[in-house]
Image (cartoon, rainbow, N blue to C red):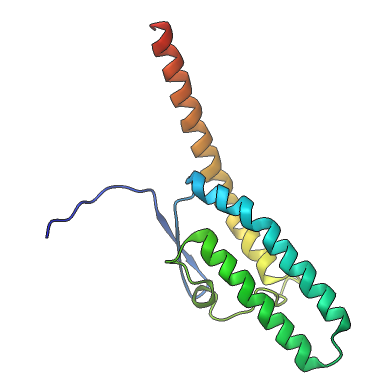
Length: 141
């Protein structure tokens, strides 16, 4: 069998216990992020409401576990099937509090933000450059 190799822009980042693979300038990544960002917030809001009525420690832990599973499923959808966030994070619950007092999910997005922001900038820059080149070609320059 012959092999076809090409640069698809996928980069690998050491993250927690694993490796996160993504193309930070992929427009599909941004579209998926838009779709799930509201879902992530909804899970967190729903969990907080349910925690207020939880009376036992066991039910609180169960609610946090359920929310963690749902959030990780969304992250797996966002970043693709090759990224298993439960494995990447070594089983740490996204709603756990980190040593800085923030939730793990908050710290995760803070760490990813510069990578995704730069990727979005690169994508927009290329799109702008291509549009400019097409305009020049139409004008005969």
